[in-house]
Length: 227
Image (cartoon, rainbow, N blue to C red; front, side):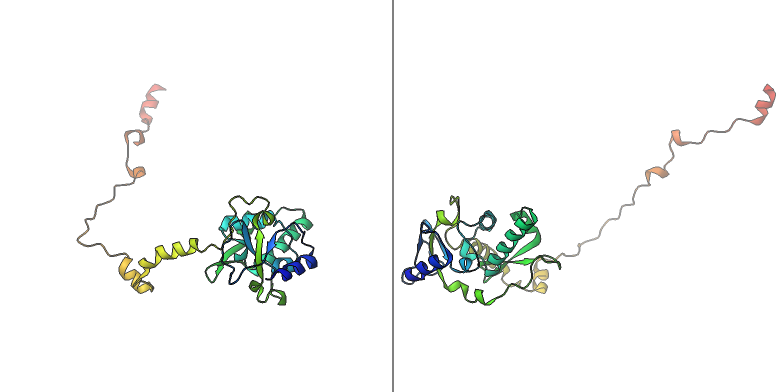
């Protein structure tokens, strides 16, 4: 976005003047790194966001080690709805709640999306015209104006976590991409040679012991002699 676009965005949505928002330069793309700044979309402001971001959004980014531009448009709407429900119900919504209700999903292996777990959903259809090509309008925002505590908050697009994982796994998948090939290489094999069978010991409760031997009943004739 250009400088005049940012000024219009600030005026239209009441973004405080102190929020340091700067245009991208030349061929800067959303993946570029500018120390002290985060790349941020215009889209969150269009649907009702203010800065700094809520603790729920910040905790989510820290947990998955992603920057704000790696969140899908669905996630931005989802956060707003959950935070509204939190206020209406007077019930706190935390990251733990989100992880139990929604499962993570990657878009193009780098953007994070969430899908509901199970058939019962808190929210349903989320698409609208406002989020079409939302990823085209972005700019730099000073990190300390996005999060209350910028220490350790990821400022740049995180490719490393996924790329390292893929790089480590790929060499081991060569020639074993199908189940039949995998089982042929790593599946269980029958035991070779003759197996010696050992008879199982008798069950303990079937073995008579001295204490378990029956005691003979006294003779009736003996009792008669005493009478």
